[in-house]
Image (cartoon, rainbow, N blue to C red; front, side, top):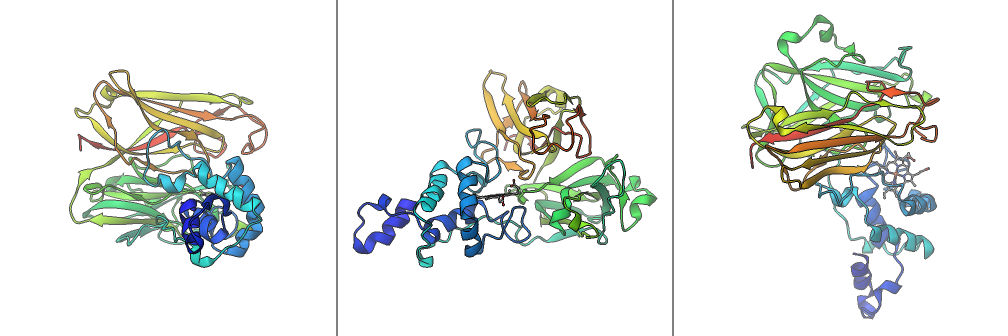
Length: 413
Ligand code: HEC
């Protein structure tokens, strides 16, 4: 792309040796930032600084170069060699693009002409035109007073999609106060299981027990909206209501006393499509020894364990661990011995994505899915809070998880 734009810029004087022209900010660097960084580095984003502002980018230039050259930014994603994901071009920065940033800094950061900006079209960070939005009943101010879970609060709220079934084609959370929210999970609950406590507008404490029978969706920092392929829908409403589970986390003292009003937005269809189900694959029985810098655990599931008579088309996987997580891998081992990689990469708590498969593999009779999680429980892990201690499965931030929320639909496409 750089060679092309440089070539266009040189047209007037003949398209000679474009590579000798150093990259400029407007022609080469701005499009890369727009494509790979701005979704987090903007006002109210997860990252630092508003990089839609050229002067702020200039002030950050040396740090940007450093993080891009070392590969520390953007946060790690599932390896593109594993498979092709929807949005791979945004999530993953190829080496050629990293080189452009280095060359620009080395050339003294020439700004160039704003007219040379090729106008990269970046994928939407929010769901376009949602037609149903379900919010918490009222804004809630986390108290962070639970002595067992300092700085953490799980609060659940009921939301009622109505007694008619709704066929969902896409979903995206509406986050009120970004700095407080560590995750949002939507669970379904049978109307007959609603207790009095659940009817309170300001919700109930749910750190020890996530009520509900099935998970419908999950969001954690960095996640992008999920849109299902044409002709597939997920059903909500009818005999079931939703529980919105908020995980609040107090990262800095200035957040104390802030309130939050979050929820979820959906695009819908008049008619049901092929049904989608979220299957949580997980390992609950690990014990990560204190001090172990690379501990791996996981599990496997055979197709025959599921008790479904047909193959399953696999749409997406959302890997989820807590702060000690460093890596994950999920693959299908087929009956004939071949293997299909589903997700494989370095884990980053600040970039928890749902990997949607561009080309959806089947999980059939005779196959099995193998999954592993890797953690760093040494004192060197900068996410370690306090002294390393033996760590098991649990909801709290100082406990760990190894989940792969997998979206499937029964039968071949
Ligand atoms: C998924 C969100 C996300 C994306 C995408 C992202 N960043 Fe970041 N970035 C963060 C977060 C969170 C931090 C602060 C925590 C940290 O330093 O790890 C950060 C910190 C940084 C910092 C350090 C600022 C400082 O003062 O230390 C730089 C530089 C940076 N990012 C560069 C980039 C560049 C360049 C890109 C694109 C190529 C990018 N980031 C994409 C989330 C993101």
